[in-house]
Image (cartoon, rainbow, N blue to C red; front, side):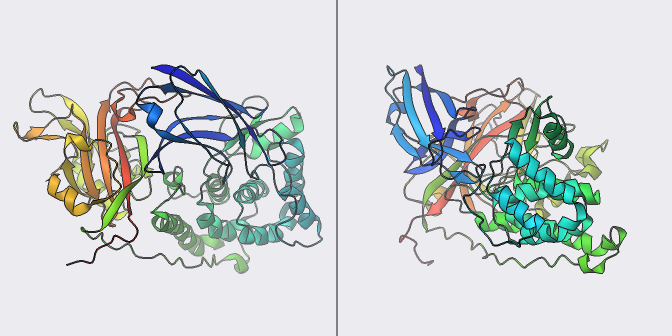
Length: 512
């Protein structure tokens, strides 16, 4: 095997370099994006490079190379893995109109007022450049007088970048009349774009202003940040109300390619907005005197109920999720303990139990809470009867699972039924670890593959990898090989991956 360097340049539709674009190399399986292989960001000149392993096996695999900036994708370049004797692959990628670059014209008609003109200008500016910062500053300097128009803008916009901008300026102004509109905007913050940006400036006045109001806890001398729409909005709410509802659980949730769980994710963000709405409508008078802002008026969300999967329906394996890990529920200060496989939402133990002296005695209450919140699985520990050692393990919560054979590890299929997989498998009992029928006990040193169906009816395949005791992994490395077999991570726990199913068109069979 040999390392191959993929070099390229991101340019916009005006042929200008695009900095800070997220470049992803994604493995395709059955023509669909399956798993990330490597990622990086373009530099200030738009240049990037990815280092990947070229092997005889990977030469025959199809890959997709995409660049993302904000919530928009680049034109993608599809290619086969280069031969092992090719050291470099040169590519040039055109990034479609970037969320950072703004638009050539206003997307909506605003009034010819000072704030309206500033919003028109802001919409056409490139985020991260000094003129954009100065426009934000001008808006903030208008103070409370600008808030009614900013509320109108927040209700009207669908732009991820404008949501960021509005979260930033409303947080800086600090007028609590904006709270109902900020709450109404929460469902709109779900999109493909859940990343943040880091910027630099040589203007000391700009740096001071941006650092004062951005969401980052720490900044270098001339650096400041702009976060995801969700973080900008939630942080504005938290600052104005000194209240929060575990919004960090939504941090890693976004809409992906061929996402079959969009309805479930939209419901999750809407329920977060509903928590905020209920709280504000009870406590608004503690923050404001004007009853005109006492009601949030959150629109209802209509989401189609998920039908239980028909066991005879024909499915194909869809998008994959790799390089995940859950920490143990018994680990102090752990934040990645519970996961909702329908959305990718993560959570730790709620604060009221977090510092309990006898967590084991409260585990039933914690598990009941997790079930009500829609989590499907959590990290725990298993004591092996053969050697008495503690091993990291995964335990289901209302999740039905069947252990499949070793030949199903990282399986891909263009046509399979749940009925077939269930017949192959053995019902899982207690833990999601390999069960050795000869010793009649779990083998925590082995990997295992499970068919699963969540309580919401989502089917998929779970790949339980090795446990991780070595948490010495450093940021910036390039992932090669099978992540679920890597015993090194940022955290200690149990590795896993999962693949969702998508119904094969025209092959659904009626129930008998």
